[in-house]
Length: 107
Image (cartoon, rainbow, N blue to C red; front, side):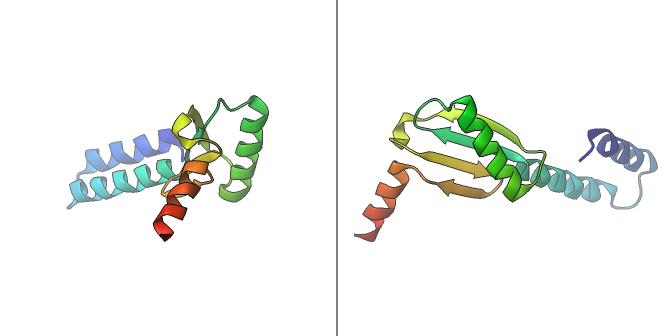
């Protein structure tokens, strides 16, 4: 999405004030937020992620979700090992803690 075009569309809508424009702006805001969430990646690792690992993760995610993703990397020792990745509403939990929790849920 182009931020300039979004701002221009909102400004035109506010200037023209067509019937129901407030509801349309709320809906448009929701769509923009959903698109931003879809392009935002949060990666948690049990240890500090190396630049090589970051590149590999970014490449794999770009292959699946397309270019233009914005990734943040964090450390979460509670994962014990492995990664937890959130892209929009998709969550991939490849952590040891996640596997142990799944195993505990089976019994």
